[in-house]
Length: 179
Image (spheres, rainbow, N blue to C red):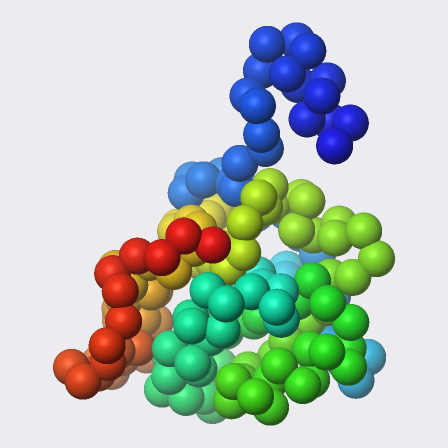
């Protein structure tokens, strides 16, 4: 809030925006609900990481995450790609969300001030960042954007040598839904 006011006072942007493609992804290490640490820098040594920021109460996140789970299922066991959810809620609520929406990929906790969310410039959830091994953001997607989720699936497919799709022809979903 204070940063927004100061920025507006000096004629800058009215709101902080999510980091754009081409920006360097801020390094972090977050823990999951069981206390296991996930340092981004270590994961990037293996390959790209798709970061999916969310809140359990967000209906657009609830729409998006089953499709992200399809991507995860397609790459599960592969060592050169990762998909991490980054929750802005506590461990108990995040576990309940995982059960309800069938998420089996790691869900990391950014509670207590949202330091990582703020470092990535989040204004809305869901927000996705596909981070390349060199730390550069390849894709930024705010809200539910079918095209962007398909692009992330396609990138993972190239790296794993398989066709990956998040959507089935029978899926009745919008092309875009703001977060």
